Amino acid sequence: MAARAQQPSATSLARYATAKQPGVDLFNGSTSRDYCNSFWGLGDAGPNIMFARMRGASKTTDELRNFWNERCVIEEEYATRLAKLAKAPIGGDEIGELRNSLDTLRIETEKQAETHMELANQTRLDLEGPTAQFHQKQINHRRNVQAPLERKFKEKQVQESYVKKSREKYEGDCLRINSYTQQATYMQGNDLLKVQQKLQRTKQTMLGNERDFTKFTKELLEMTQTWEKEWKDFCDSCQDLEEERMDFMKDILWAYANDVSTMCVSDDQSCERIRTALDQLEPEKDVENFVNEYGTGNTVAQPPEFTPSNGLLDPQLPGSPVMKTVDHQRVSRRPAPAYHSEAAAMGSTHSRQQSGDELQHSASQQLNGDSHSYEGSVVSQNGAIGGSGSGGGAGGSGGSIAATASYTGRSTASPPQTSPPNHPPPPVPDTSANLSAAAAGGAGQSTTRTPSPAARPYRDSQPLPMLPAGSTARPNDRPQTPPPPLPQQQGNKILFYVKALYDYTATIEEEFDFQAGDVIAVTATPDDGWWSGELLDEARRVEGRNVFPSNFVCLF
Image 1 (cartoon, rainbow, N blue to C red):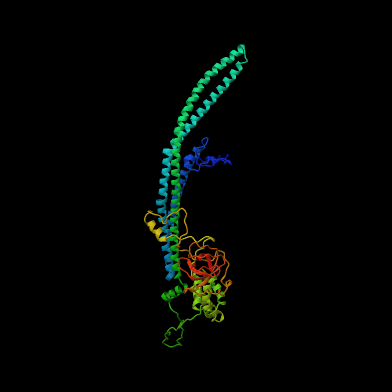
Image 2: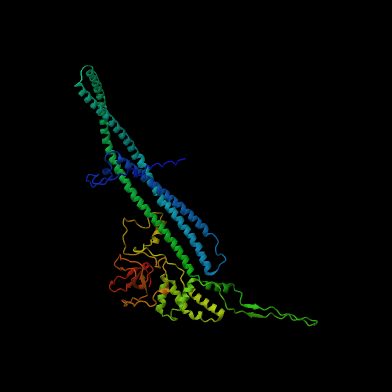
């Protein structure tokens, strides 16, 4: 069975599109682009386009309402499954910080379920409801304004067809009368009589067609005057409704983006609380706490020795059991994690002694997402412990202790990805304002929409930097000797050096421009992600401009 051809959509404007002729001005030099001055022209193209446009606008609003409804259903299902997952037992047999971390995971999962359920309710209340109301307004406009005008438009088209047909008949009668009149000039006898009879009948027919043509033309003229007035009013109402719809769509989509970003910030805060709980988890301490609380000691009872009676009448009672204590050397067969191996490899390249400034430099590297250098410094400090063992057992123990020192010093927090190059990092939404606005029941949105958001002089918090995805840079590939420090001005102390990953153009007076590959001496690292520092290139350094985004750089 052949596939049925798809019918073109009644709301599509594509079928009304026409190629613009070069050099032809449809507006005759007018600069007005209002609907009431732009949809006339020859024929009926203007009304058809306007009717299709209004039907398509109503269809778009209805599709957006369905989108909000589906999004609410998805969020509700997701929140329900998260709430069910949060009630599942996990880690009931654990103790210490691991138990606390698992409890935090369950609690934060339950909070995320509540957040997503709030988003579903807020979307249904603040987005789906107003969209449905506006769609009903469009339906009323089409029913009360557009539908009567469409019927009048069809009546006008019918009247134009009457005028066209009566005109054709009248013009045909005129042509036949002229023809018969010319024939009568050179005919005689019976032929002349026949032509005169035809001429008489044609004149009588022409009089009837002339009356019809005059009547239809007069009625069309009266109808056209009324139509032009009503069409102009309809175009004005359509333009008002379309402008309102455009502004409504922009506001509602902006509110949706604010609601989703608020939820994302809330989820990120939950994840941060989980990471904070994991920062307190140290496997060695948990193992030690388990032993201290539930350990049974290191005393071992020897098997009793049997002493024969040697035929005596009274057998000898067995003596008291002999006790001994164990003091074994642990041999760990656990494969060392990758970061232990890297830290051990770096330990041989560092000095065994580090000054206070070098320790601060290592801590700054760890904060900036580079845990390898920090682990290497820890292993180098404990290198003597790792190398003190001799033999198979002792050597394994020493390696385990060194690995332990590196493991306890590493950070488990993973910094977020950097923003795309050549674009400033996007501002993080104000969480407190968003949550308070959501609690107010949608009375106001978390942020105010503006037609063209501009750069603000006061920055919001930004994510900390990390190396780009796929980077193969290793700590041992970086120069071990930092570049010469800047002259310390106003008591600023150089913490460490960073290298620019992308070009950056300053947007406020406190910032400075830099290019990919520039080296910057960092003097302060606020938590908002906008650090302070100075370019090492004196030719491009500007006094008083020392702020730069931390997620555009990596450690040097």
